[in-house]
Structures are given as structure tokens and as C-alpha cells.
Length: 139
Image (cartoon, rainbow, N blue to C red; front, side):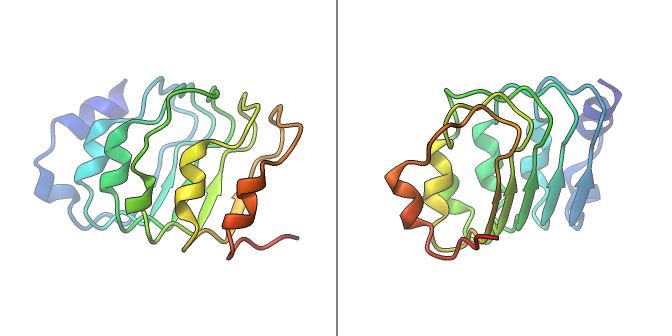
């Protein structure tokens, strides 16, 4: 909770040039909405927390290139619909969650996504839409 309080109590201009946030292992149950005001944010790592959902405000981080949300408690269900605005997002790591399918918003990243990590989930098959991720590298 201290992390969220620090974010909420700072003027937006303090964080306007922050490019990277490493908020791992903080026990966060939700992603701080204040992150949307980080105009220069490129790398966001909130691994090893207790996140269950991703807020719509994430789509405000239009310079984001790397999103790491591994080892949280993310499930299928209500994901932000507006990931199409994240045109710079090249790497997404959702490993170690409780997903049974690839979240639909991932397919909105067809023009930018190069790396998608989904290990240690419960995904048993890949949907046909995976072919729309034309820049995705397999290796």
C-alpha cells in the first residue's frame, strides 16, 4: 500500500519523465491508476504481486514498450479493450498467472508485438488469431 500512497501524493510533473517502473513483490492487489500520468513510461514491471485485473488506464501509457506482469493472479475475463493505443508495446510477459487463454487485447498489438511470454499458465491451445501477430517471434 505504501507504493500506491507515494504515487498518489506526488504532483504529476514529478513523474512526467519516468521511463521505467520496477514494482515487483510489493503485494499490490491492483495496478495504481496514477501510472497513466507517466507520459514517458516505457518499461513497467509489476511481477510477483497479487494483481487480478488490468485497469483501462493502462492504455494511456502510449510509449510503453515492455509490460511484465508475471507471477500475479491474472485470470481470463475483464481485460482493457483499448490496447490498440499501445502501438509501441513490443514485449508482454504474462507468465505464471491463471490464464486459460490469451487475453483478447493482446491481438490488438498486431503492428508492434514481438515477444509474448505465457508460460506457467493453463493455456492448452492457441487461437487462430495468433496469426494476426505478424511480428511475433517464435523461439
